Length: 285
Ligand code: KIV
Image (cartoon, rainbow, N blue to C red):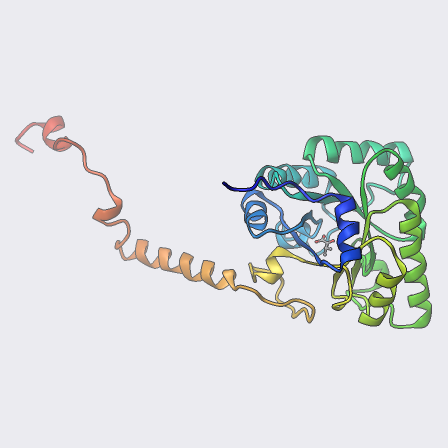
């Protein structure tokens, strides 16, 4: 008999950190990617606002709206009902009044049906993280390279290289833990600093481009599977499959066959019980 799989919980993730059991996280944006991630046994699915880049074709995550996130989260939670789904609060949806922020979080949870939300930033958003966790919503933090601030940062640069940057990142991580976050994503952070932050926190760190010492790892679905992902090389990504090439080959094969009239052939076509032309026009035709 197949065992019923239950979504992981935030306390289980904390235990996994203690036990040295790595947490696996991947992004997904729709029903099929979410069902495949669940089948593969992923612990946490992230509906990342990276959907702006990899699904919607924007240059950054900034144009992604709350409605976009809700729409994609609904599809993901339908595709992976037994997996813990976290959704990004998109650009500028948590920087206004607390009432507006809480209303946005409520929409994401009630309409998208995710189990937690993720927010970018450290000390400067800690009070908001605290208010959201006090309202009963699990929050995952995200520090290091924060793509919603890419134009302020000035590009996709590795963070924490200088001692000043490193001290700020550690302070941010601790502020998020203090505010009640259940985990923190460390993006594009030097491996030494990621190791230090991981040791200093009691909540799990989930790394992307942050080396092997984090308590878990996350990658973007389209990157690890080479599914028409951005073409510039990302040192921190390992390619596990090249489905982009397979899709391209499949589609050009289809175009070739239709042009050559070799598809569909008899094996893909249907026959009626009688000769339709004879029935419609009589035996003369
Ligand atoms: O939006 C996203 O996919 C993310 C991951 C890169 C962590 O935030």
